Length: 191
Image 1 (tube, rainbow, N blue to C red):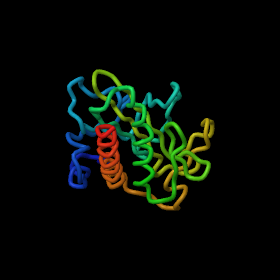
Image 2 (cartoon, one colour):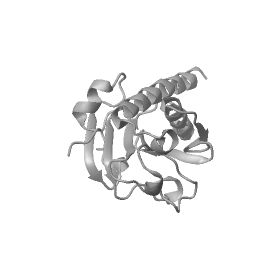
Image 3 (tube, one colour):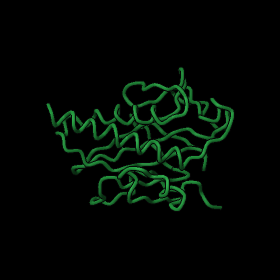
Image 4 (tube, rainbow, N blue to C red):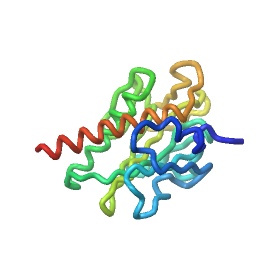
């Protein structure tokens, strides 16, 4: 069965430079770990299922295969490394803007709908780059969301009552990340 995150479905939707090159893998331990050291800025890897998905502070990110949007994108920021932690909030704002419902960033790396977590951001910096991991609960039903989560989870499907295409959401998030990332870099270049 083909995934709605397959390359031929995602590439035509991309409007900016982030998301290129794009790679889809059906399953992996974590998309964060799949990039070569020389991966260019914008390189993106998405998956239907992570067997060892991670969150902040070593927490586990559980997913139901094919239901969440799970991807990582490589950034090569020009500002000093000391300000790179700000990219967590930059990405959170991007996800918030791309979602088709009212959401907010909960510092430092969660996106919330009301008091329920719909997405998480995990930036990892090394060797002149940031690999920005993003997980969004998209089409999980109430019984597919983890009951033992630190923050009560939700999904787009749970909130809206219908399923959502993951490829258009991925393209929208990448475009919003690019816009906010570029503005962030420009802001630091001017200071």
